[in-house]
Amino acid sequence: MIESVKSLDEIIIQKVRLGIMSALMARGEADFRFLKDTLGVTDGNLSIHLSKLEEAGYVASRKEFVRKKPHTTYTPTDAGRAAFHAYLTALERIVQSAAQTGAGHD
Picture (cartoon, rainbow, N blue to C red):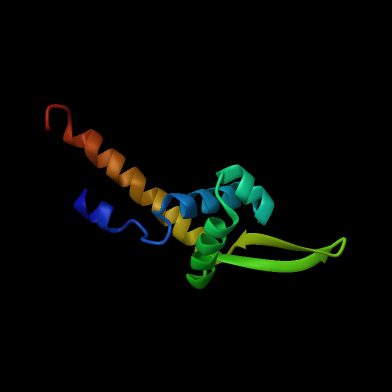
């Protein structure tokens, strides 16, 4: 189980970034406002976490103007999808390992 815990992605493990990746994986893409409203975070907080995901190569952004207002849409990259699936696999291994260890090990 220790190896599975060590294999958890340091970028994705943070709760806001995990929420962003989960939303993007479920929807395929989402705009800034949707992510902000869904996750209940501030503009600044969301911007910081989106930047970290972009720097890691997990998220791509597309900026355009809609009715003369800036509109940014985010999508998971292939690397982001792979990292998210690897994260879920590591969590599954932790759960399976704990279940196999059995009860009574406090």
